[in-house]
Image (cartoon, rainbow, N blue to C red; front, top):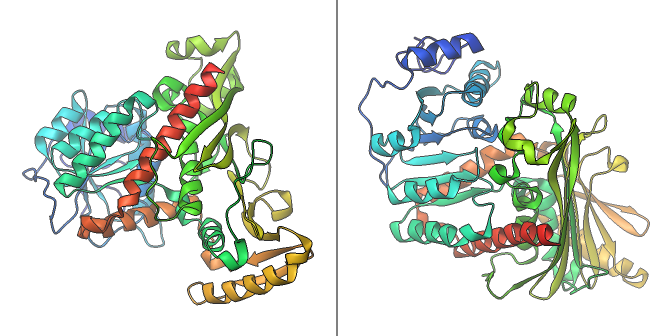
Length: 476
């Protein structure tokens, strides 16, 4: 058994795990045993200890891509025995073994039936980490908060509007207990989204947010993800439950949570929004991305469509309901969103996010197409030609101010629009954003009262729009 600083995560009372066969051998040898007494979670523990619950999504591993000074290297993992657990362990092993800035996680794995009840009974840490199946997630979150755990959970927390009361119960309980329950919203840490938010809230540049209309919304956003991709140097193998929309959610209910979050985070920063009165869902539609049997085999490793997907299988084709378009009004401002899943990205491209916020003086746009070499760029486009000089002068002044925080930012004029030139050092990838979210969460953990009150309102509004949007699309 290796010491804490060695490359492979330590699995107590088991052989080291360096390959799949060794993983299964270790699990069968009794990974669930521990060599130290369990620790009880306390709201003000000096050392943070993670307890990872059923890491069925690769995002669970990305939370452990970096070490954090206040987090103990010993991580308890409670999960069913299966390939998703093996994938999680393999990814963490690679983080420990990388030549530059290796991590030094030690995994205490508890595999098998009744894993969640064991986790609550044994209480191995004070922070419960969730990134996996979504249907039961909110029930487990509620129980963890009731047991005194802080919660760091990947999206989505709920996939049906019927679970909104349970979400509100979880957030209220965390608040009353002095605990932090935090949603992993990684896209807030993309530099183009950060700067877009700054400029939208600079009246001299943006003016006032327009109301727009159904034909010309004031806010539009489009997110495109891909089923086949590589993560941390490994081809992504998706579990079959990922394609079951009754388990993982569809379209806007899952990855669309990021897009909805960015809308209100950008347009209404620090404002208390009420999902009961501030939003009106106007229309929605859904459609499929069809997968052949061979494509399904490539992305899952399974030779055939499983029985739990049979209702969406038609001959040799699986109809994956993963695309959603929704139109709603937020405090009277028209918002139009489109969430798409394609099979695979074009050469040189990856997942994509584009967004436009229209103000009375200018539009602030993120574009990520072929012209941008498929990486996000930020543009400012004056609302009318006669505003060009005023808007660009105000933009130059604003960017000069922002450059005090992000040195090297510049304005590049391109005819009737201006591009914000962003130095390469600020362009972090999606995987790096997980460390940013986790660091923010750990900051709130030091003093839970510093968690802004609007975050709870934001979550409730976000999940109302996402779940009701899917339900509206299904009925259209």
